[in-house]
Image (cartoon, rainbow, N blue to C red; front, side):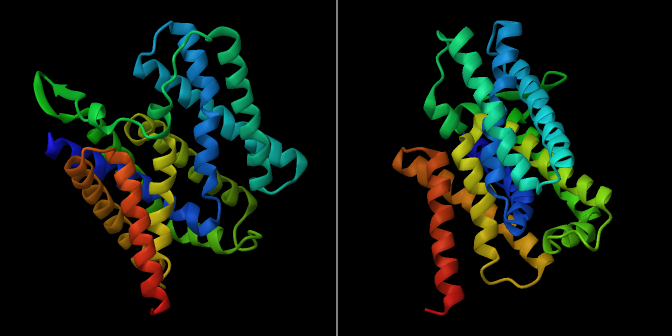
Length: 276
């Protein structure tokens, strides 16, 4: 059981940090929190259409909602000629409000566990086995998060140079407008599919923490973007291991313990960077 928890927690933390690093550099880390709210209408519609809380159906609904949110954001930003952050701030509350209205109108009897939404339940997630031709190959969420992590890292590596221009050239003077738009779409999509996969494991709050804190900690004292990207993943893995062991030792929330260790590492990095 401990091994499975470590696998799921580490893969989840790595997947979050692989895209969170770029959100921190761009200064749009709250996009992750906004996307987690914008997925609500897709989840509710999926429940209404299927009449069940099956994870696959909810995941498809969330995916459709996420894609719709990104496309609507891009359309809005092109029409009003506003910065992407403004378009995001206008779009996500709209989608979340639609989701809340649907819940109030059609699913008032549906029980939504606040703990599952905020902190997830990594213990249950680690129990979902993946079988291939009758052979148990480990927790399903481990493989899902590992695939997301590898895709995020692969695409980020290929687009590393243009991503640097996008992150540090706020007015996009060094990139053609369509390239800048495609890179922004990639970051938004990567954030969306990562959040969709992590909600059941660590919840929305801890997901934002894992996307933000490891990268913010490393960037306090690392000057090279490439080395900072590697160190961010190393710290994310350490946060996962420490969180799992702490949660099991004290019989408390593992996701909460991961967030606690992320904060402790950030505090240590801040002190070290100031030379106290």
